[in-house]
Each structure stands twice: as C-alpha cells, then as structure tokens.
Length: 231
Ligand SMILES: NC(=O)c1ccc[n+]([C@@H]2O[C@H](COP(=O)([O-])OP(=O)(O)OC[C@H]3O[C@@H](n4cnc5c(N)ncnc54)[C@H](OP(=O)(O)O)[C@@H]3O)[C@@H](O)[C@H]2O)c1
Image (cartoon, rainbow, N blue to C red; front, side, top):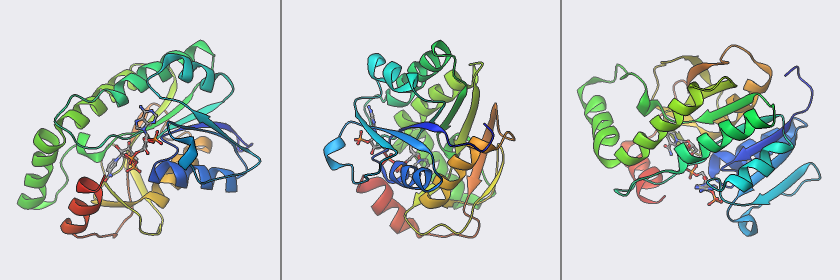
C-alpha cells in the first residue's frame, strides 16, 4: 500500500488493542470495518466506521467481511484456559482462504513474544516464561502457533506481530526487530500504532516482527492481576 487510506478490516476490534487500533486508524483517515461478537458494547462511532456483528470462526462472516477490504488486522484474543482453544487458528485459516479467494494481499496478525526465542531475562524471567508457555497458557499458545503456521504458509503479504505483555499505559513509541527484541512490556497504544504502520511499510512483509515499548515496566503483580486473572 502506498499511503492512501485503506479499507481496513479489524478483527478483535472490541478488545483493548482492537479499540485503540480502530481509533488510530480513523485518525489516520482509513475506512474501518470493525468485527465484534458484541456490537452493542462497541463504543466508537464515526462516519468512516462500519461495525460488523459476527464470530470470526464463521466462514460466511469472514468471507463477507474480507470482500470489501484491502487490508486485514487481526487482534483476536482468548483468555488462558485449560480447555482447547481454536479461535486463533480457525480465524487465521478462514482469513487466509478468504483473502486469497478475493484476490487481496495484506494480512497482519498479532500473536505473542511467548512464541519467540527466550529473552535474556534471567532465571526468574525464563521460569515465568516456561510456566506461561507450557502450563498456564499452553492451549492459547499452542493455538497461536497454529495461527502462525497457516499465516506463514500462505502466499499473502503477511506480517506476524509478536508483542510481549500488554498494558493500558499510554504509548511511549515502540521498537521493532525481526524475530526477537528485548523488553517484556508493551503499551497497547504502541501496538496499535505499530500494526497500522505496517500498512505503509514493506520491511516486515512475510516476516515475524517482534516489538516492545522500550523501557516500559509493569510489576509482575499488575500483569498477573490485570492481564491474566481479570480477563
Ligand atoms: N494480554 C497480554 O498481555 C498479551 C500479550 C501478548 C500478546 N497478546 C495478544 O494480543 C492481542 C490483543 O490482546 P488484548 O488483550 O488487547 O485483547 P483480548 O482481550 O485478548 O481480546 C481481543 C478480542 O477478541 C475478540 N474475540 C475473541 N474471540 C472471538 C471470536 N470468536 N470472534 C470474534 N471476536 C473474538 C473479543 O471481542 P468480542 O468479544 O467483542 O467479539 C475480544 O475483545 C491478542 O491476540 C492477544 O492474544 C496479549
């Protein structure tokens, strides 16, 4: 894309990252189709915004939503659970099929730094990472990994974005690198900005982009309470 306004489909639009992505996309002049299962709670109104009610695991919903767009950003998320999770992989497969069928190209999906190589965060950091990846969040991470597999096996112009732990703190500007970056916390405002910047940036096409808000911190207690237990 070359800087002109996009017709953008945002999945997970009613989540905390999705709402920020929709807001910033509208500020940048894009036309946005926001997909949510709960349109009655979606707070944003705008004349360039269309809100679509639907489930991202429904093939008909995804096909119709993709038909009228030229770029897709997926911020869909699931809470940690012991039950099998399928929303990441199912929506990814449907998106890849629909985007190809409608002869579109650009797909940007959010997964997690938990799928990337370990950071240099010491024994406690790595213990926490293994606990999350292989125990507490195993079914979520396994499904995100499936999402990454189907997206990266496609011939679309895809970008996989892996943020670390997210917070609602104001953005401070993000840092991004291929595959790996140091930093355990990211502002959702920064993540939204990074996702939208990809619409005019070819550097991470067909690549995994690791991103963070450099220097941002949050206590383990805050992250456990706000990002794991209260979700
Ligand atoms: N929280 C963290 O610390 C963290 C860390 C790294 C990566 N991530 C990833 O970053 C992304 C954004 O996370 P977030 O915490 O801002 O958002 P989130 O709370 O994980 O949720 C995003 C939204 O996904 C939507 N969703 C879930 N299942 C759906 C379905 N079947 N169909 C349609 N929509 C569905 C929900 O909206 P509706 O209910 O309105 O449909 C929800 O509000 C996610 O991919 C998450 O896994 C999070």
